[in-house]
Length: 240
Image (cartoon, rainbow, N blue to C red; front, side):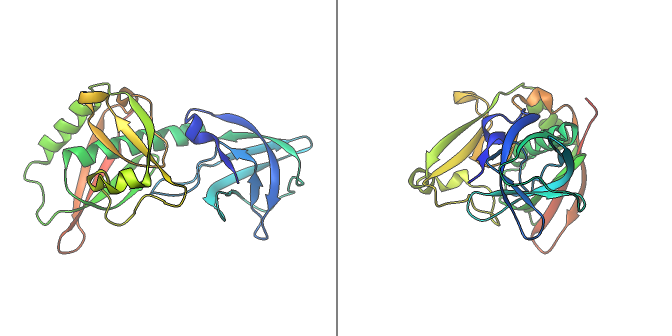
């Protein structure tokens, strides 16, 4: 089991760790990691591992068996032995952009209150697919509303509920294609806002900024038709 340090602190750039396993494909498993694994539309983190006498570039992180997270080297290289203490450094600039895009997409699902059929997160842009038969009449109005929400400086936090509590509140799940992972008995929720001023609350395992002010201004890009009732809304990050 890999301890998920990115859930404890999404801003953790560097972390220690110990090698607990090596996969046949050349992946590295640690006892704890701040590398987010590819899941929920958010790419796995890249970065570097450093240890006494060696270092290796990490191209991405993926989920392994159970709660293991596998760090995938960018190219074949000398591997640290099991038991080796290492230092982990994620590509922070890339991760922070993922956090900004991911949080902005949560707010996009507020501005367009329709079922979400898919999504993807990048370092410069992201997108959500909606069950949307007709294109929005005024894209500029959507853009304005989204940026007004971002400018509200909402705090972003996490909380946990039981699987039974989620079953009693099915409206919390906005995604039609991806359901929250089950089996542990608890579900992680991401809340944007506080109390009665909550803008959004939904299950999510990804990393997010701590305040919407960190997103900066965004731009809604092309809205594409993807099937009879499916439309893809692209979102682009601005420069902070």
